[in-house]
Length: 242
Image (cartoon, rainbow, N blue to C red):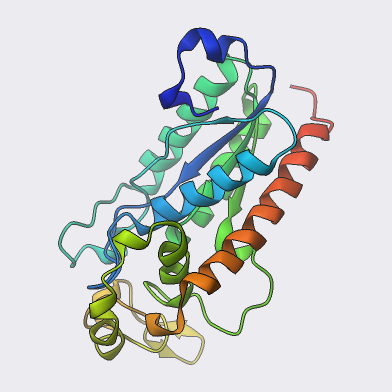
């Protein structure tokens, strides 16, 4: 059940404690992919898992702005501080819990959100009347022969499968030629760069031409299976005393 498309009376009849919250970002993904890539991909995984899960689960509207200041040099990128982001996520989970949906999986599509989501989920579990756990889809697709990158083959492939109209296929070569081979500017194990424009001309890391709709279908299948398994575990988990 998607909160934004249901009536309150129908949602009041939902017999579940489970909720999914897609969490993305609005940030550059090169010349070929939309700024909403991370949000679209998180939504695709959350929707597929909700459809496959054998039981009821509520799907909240996506959180579309995250921790993304590292892309500030590229037009259209939006960001928030980690403290603001954590507070917002916590408030959303608190709102869900107030309606009885107090077992929440945060379905994340942006690497910059990972640390903040783990931290805020810990605060929620320790101090609030809810349980929350983060799930980052690209960490849950098994072993892959390609790197995650940024606007690279994995993100592009999932878009090509789930939201093909958003990908500028005629710009993939341009995206690859202006991109970087890896994330960061390294001296030994130290990343000297803080912003992505320090090491990538057009914001891309990796070669999006290595992606495809077929690969995207495989990624979605794998991530969905992992998320369904997590939902089953969260549904049965014995929660700590609050």
